[in-house]
Image (cartoon, rainbow, N blue to C red; front, side):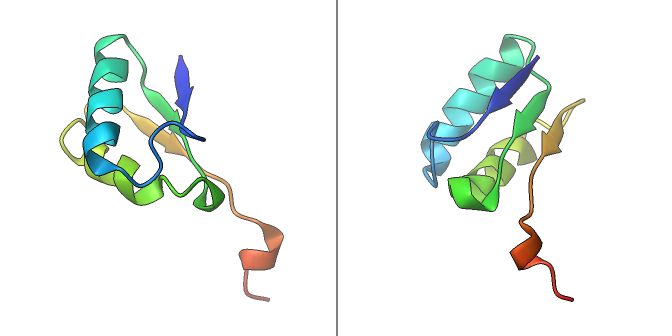
Length: 67
């Protein structure tokens, strides 16, 4: 089971910790994010304390890749 972070907590680290904590307790191990969501840093901080078996999926746009 996974949790998408689009419009979930944005850059709010306190909210991210609460959401991630509840999600992990419920069995979520995959978190989906993207630079355009604005949640990557907050998700990283929230997962720093709960890295047991979790994975993060993200996306990069081709325009972000240096040629």
